[in-house]
Image (cartoon, rainbow, N blue to C red; front, top):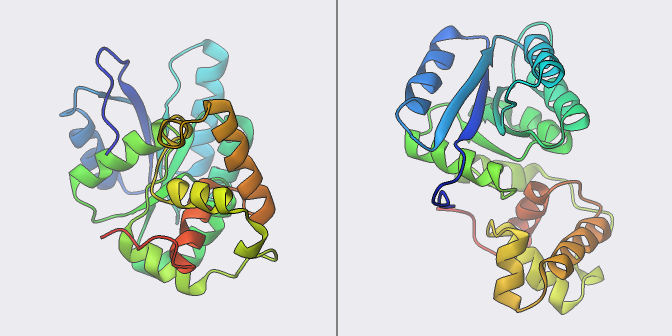
Length: 226
């Protein structure tokens, strides 16, 4: 689990869910963690986008991470995730899902989601997902990951297109390492690590580190999270 750097600013969190009790539960948890700060909440995607636009205009604090329900009225989670990723790329979205929404999860990942959680996840896992997303890492719920890898269509260009170093990079990405950690482990510059990751995603025709992690699991480069 990514640690909170000493003296770091609290991670700003927004929750978007049409069920008030879910929002209250998330807020109650966030309020117990000193390294988190609740920025706001919304009952659907339209309200979330309106709040983000207002905060950006007024200069109010923006969330670092949005916890996003998938099934909501007016504007659903997939569409809202895509809109946030396009208009506010610095804001990371973690999807809240259930076992019956695997296809929607796949669509949300394609739209730019940074990870996903089951709605009945323990508070500690919610914290792990928030911290991971805030530093550009990947969080995968193990049960959903297994379902997604079974349904995930293969890339048009396979792993054979990768060099040995790029396969190593892919495995490290799938294990949740940031570019800085990859650079440290491989004794290369962070810029070189970032370039390698970009090349891997491009060759595999993937749009996110989360999709890369799923592919690595499916292809046996790493084992699914326990």
